[in-house]
Structures are given as structure tokens and as C-alpha cells.
Amino acid sequence: MKTFVYIDHFKGEIQPASWEAIGLGKSLGPVSAVVFGSGVDAITKAAFENGADEVFVAEDTALADYRAEAYASTLSALVSAQSPDLVLFPTTARTRELAAMTAVDLNTGVLTDISGLEANGDQLVATRPIYEGKVLEKTVCFGKPVLATIRGRAFPKLEPDASHTGTPTKVEVKAEALTKVEGYSASESAVNLGDAGVIVSGGRGVSNNPSLQPPTGMEEKQAELWRAQQGFALVTDLANVLGGAVGASRAAVDAGYIPYSHQVGQTGKVVTPDLYIACGISGAIQHLVGMRNAKLIVAINKDSDAPIFKQARYGVVGDLFQIVPALTEAFRKKLGK
Ligand SMILES: Cc1cc2nc3c(=O)[nH]c(=O)nc-3n(C[C@H](O)[C@H](O)[C@H](O)COP(=O)(O)OP(=O)(O)OC[C@H]3O[C@@H](n4cnc5c(N)ncnc54)[C@H](O)[C@@H]3O)c2cc1C
Image (cartoon, rainbow, N blue to C red; front, side, top):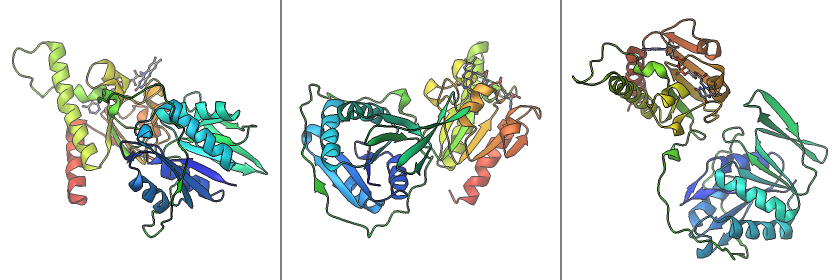
């Protein structure tokens, strides 16, 4: 099986799931990486180091910024010429669009956000979570080639090998784009929970520390937000020591403790970190569907009957305002930070 892997990057920062896609492709046969952009030597080198047998590079200033028209026409032309059996993409906002447009050009289909892939004869059977992860669907694509976007952290990547190099193959650029990117500005959705190996999340409990005295004259709601800030500062400290990201329950987001971009759950992000630490979160089903596939769940909650403990491998019954800083300190020492 011949597999192409599209390496997704933004301003030189590569989406880690691109390497996971190479790992998946290599389990099926040889892999060619596809790199588009301008000034992409470092990305090309990294693609070889991460296991690509061959790297196709479309390099042009017209491809400096991702734009669907130019990228999709270049990719469709390359795939038509090279006829791979499978084209894999890490799942991102860009690749959802790119894969869909390329599939239209090639008259095939896209399997989106897959978490498993196996060959059954000459057919590829993908597994993908649906209905908020409650059901796993097996699905096949009858078009050729099969295009699939893979869920981050669902497949292992290969160990990078700095000695693995090669000569990239240049690709003709089809850059008749009708749009131009004028610039970028950061938005609050910059939080990348999907790629985080560790997530420390806070819930409504982060504001529950009556012994914290807010500055005098503060109204009740302001005092609650002030307490929540102190609670989330502890959650953030722990996340920083563990090199992780900060998540939240919807109750914390709705109460204004933290922006929506941190929300985990049915109406937030679905995450699969190696470690998920839930602080002051009760474990409502709408939260659980967003994090229950984490490899290891730790819960800290005052209430020993909180449903989150049923999902957690380790549970600490107690006040997060005491336990979280103690954990941070212990990890700081252990990790020498
Ligand atoms: C359609 C729909 C979609 C939803 N989508 C989402 C979603 O995407 N994500 C989501 O999270 N929720 C979602 N919800 C809301 C969900 O039902 C819960 O209301 C929410 O998850 C509760 O958040 P919480 O656990 O932080 O708050 P609570 O349920 O109020 O729990 C707070 C917990 O903190 C503990 N606690 C309090 N003080 C301390 C302390 N000092 N130390 C330790 N523990 C303490 C308490 O014992 C309690 O268990 C959705 C609801 C609906 C109806």
C-alpha cells in the first residue's frame, strides 16, 4: 500500500499528528510525505527524520500562507500523477478543508477524524468515534485513493532518526489563488488542547475557597471571580510544571472563570491526553464524553461520591486548594524544575 502523508504546519510549527500519520502509513507500507509552503527545508528534513521514505515538496512564495484553492489544486495534481492508495492528514481546521476540496477534485471521499485503520483484503476499514464518542463507527470509502484525516494522539509515531535523510522531489505548484492572506492575529482559541499530552482542568470548585478573603468592597460576583482566578492560578501552575495545558468544565466557563477555548466536553473539545487531572469537577456526562478516553485520569474533589471518581484511576478526596499546590511542589522536586 502506497501512502501519502500531508505535513500540516503553521509558520514552521508542525502539527505533531503529522508524524503520527507517518507512523500509521508505515504500518501499511512505504510513505511519501508532502510538504507545501515557502522556506520549508527544516520541515522537509524533519519529515525524513520522522520516517518518510520520500518527500514531495511544493515550494513557492505563493504557498507561504495556507489557502485552500492553491493547496488543493497542487495536492490534487500531485496525487493524480502519483496514484497513492491512501492520503493521510492530521485533523486540523486547515486539513478538513484541504482534504474535502482535494476529494472533490479527485472524485473520491474523505474519512474524517479516524482513530483506527486496518486493511481488510484490499479495502481499508477506518474506526471513528461518533455521537460524542459514545459509539465507534467502522467505515469504508469506495473511492480511490482513500483520503483520511487522523485524530491527534490516536496513533503512535516513530522514533525520530536524525541520520535518516534523503533528497526531496520538487512538485509543480498550481497557485492560481483568488485570495491573499493579509496577516494574522492571535485569538483566544489559540489554546491547543487537542495535542496536549497532559491537561489539568478546573471546574466550579476552583472558586470554592471561603478562607480566601477578596479585597474589601468587592461585590459577591466579583469576589467569586477573584477566588476562581486564585484557583485557576494553582491549576495553571500544576499544568506548567507538567508541561501541559489548562482545561475547564462548562460550569467554569459559563461562570466567566476562564475563556471557552479551554472547555472540555460535549460542547467543548474532545481530548485524549496521556494524563488528565480534574480539579473540582463533578464528572457530569457532558464533561466525561470530552475526556474519558484520556490514558490516565486523576480526580481531586471534596465529595467522595462525585461521579468523576468512577472514571478516575486515581482519586484524591479533599480540598483542591491544598492538594493542587502540594502536587505541584512534589512534581517540581521530582522533575527538578
Ligand atoms: C447540552 C449540554 C452540554 C454541556 N456541555 C458541557 C461540556 O462541554 N463540558 C462540561 O464540562 N459540561 C457541559 N455541560 C454541563 C454539565 O452538565 C455540568 O453542569 C458541568 O460539567 C458541571 O461542571 P463542574 O463539574 O465544574 O461543576 P459542578 O457540577 O458544580 O461540580 C463542582 C465540583 O467541585 C467540587 N468542589 C467544590 N469545591 C471544591 C474544592 N475546594 N476542592 C475540591 N473539589 C471541590 C464539588 O464537590 C463538585 O463535585 C453541558 C450541559 C448540557 C445540558
